[in-house]
Length: 268
Image 1 (tube, rainbow, N blue to C red):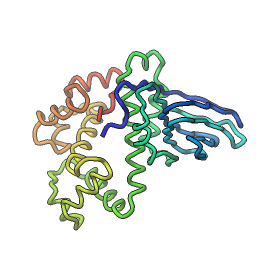
Image 2 (image 1 turned 180 degrees about the vertical axis):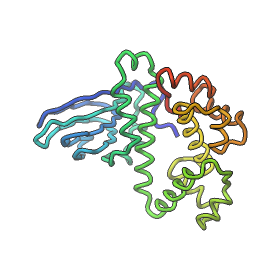
Image 3 (image 1 turned 135 degrees about the vertical axis):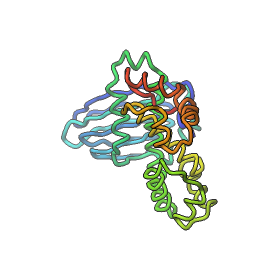
């Protein structure tokens, strides 16, 4: 499920703040992600105070008022991602508010926000779709982890199933295999995945296969057919169709684009 609205203007950056310095207040609807790499911060979001100490990743969505107050007696070092523009409606903010707050820094979230923050300004201006896709991938990673962390009883089940899928992408896995492996009904497994990711378990599996396939296109010299078979695709044509659907390019053109300057994250 897409989290960011079409037409959103996205910016990444890197800033440092001394003790007791402030950023804001900002008014109106805001969506931001902040990677606090050093220092500490209090964030005032529509009258609610959130606090975090480095290292931390913060997801922030506000309707009326947003202000950062840096503290801790040392310089705070942050990478940030900010969505701006009139397309951020109150409904978009409301959908994200259950996920607002601090999360531990993951390897994926750190890499995504750092990549955006270190893009040359002219590159970001020239590739708005890439920058927006990068922000969408970052937001999806944070919301996905928050959903798993907040899931009451199903969290342990879905976490184990996800690890199982990630470790067996090359295998021919069906819902019957998952039900047998985890002693759960197929319907219950799909309910867990729908609640956590908005898609069925097998849709999630194909999403993982496409993501790893794109990674292998970028980082290996394997033939497209070899990558397809190693990720559980029955034919290279099937792999090509899903790569094109996710990235807008066939595998060989995506690989060329990767080698010339980086892969855009999936649009979904």
